[in-house]
Amino acid sequence: QVQLVESGGGLVQAGGSLRLSCVASGGIVTIMGWYRQAPGKQRDVVAAITRSGSANYADSVKGRFTITRDNAKNTVYLQMNSLKPEDTAVYYCNADIVKYTDLRSNNYWGQGTQVTVDS
Image 1 (cartoon, rainbow, N blue to C red):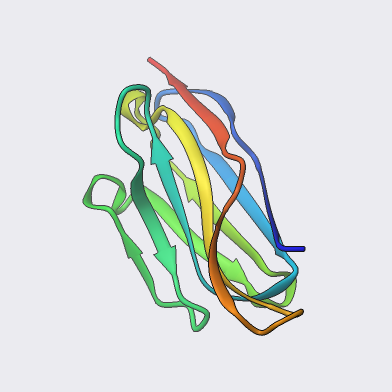
Image 2: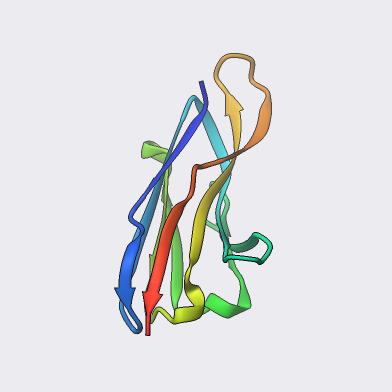
């Protein structure tokens, strides 16, 4: 069974830092990424990283957020620095995973973790 389990959200003051983690299980992970959704807004990509480590970021987080991954642990991290109130959202892990059971690739979502930045 494929699962994405996120952790690391919480409440932080503006200018502070948080680190999100997402562990995947049940298959081989290719692309992993983080999305976020604020109340009343659509879900947008924050950052994504390939298996080889090539990363891309939304313009709004460039220079403040860093996405990394540990392929041996099937884990992706999002280090968030210099947080702003507008970063407040539910953050979702997303991954393309090739299942061990049938070697088919599908896209999966985690359950989401709340990040709140207090001004």
